[in-house]
Image (cartoon, rainbow, N blue to C red; front, top):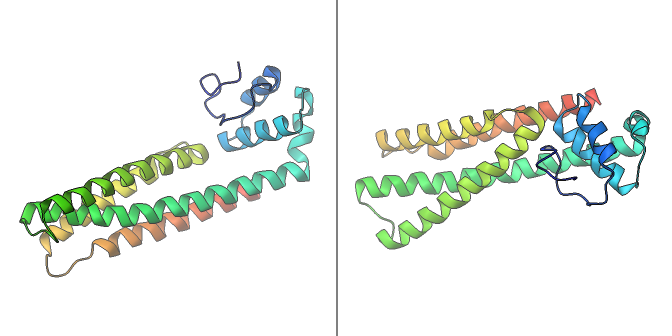
Length: 191
């Protein structure tokens, strides 16, 4: 019964979790990340009584576990963003090389690098979107990254001798990192 289809906020967890606890957590007006952290905490403590959720929420050990979860999310977001910058830059360079037929080595090698960059870019965008939806219930970061890559590509096409692709992607990275840090601080202060 305790699966992610019934509870979309639930990450991988032990199957012996009490369904009453999961149902009680699901009814709470908490962000998905807090629900998930509570479920993990209750599973690790073998908690069976849904009435103890309020007491657990106030405990220092749960707050420490939630803070650790937020720190892990911040590290994951930073890593995804850095990979997106690198792969986005490589993909923009590949598209521009195809349009102008000026390859670094030859088409085959550039196509392999461009394809790998695109796969890694999409994979990290999915991870970043899933992470931001867990905290914010929005795809704002996905839209921001897509617009930055499109803008970088257009700038790269228009200004062949002065490349600002990396500058645009780095600016979006610092903006999103600042915004994510602010959200995390608000989230932790609200707890």
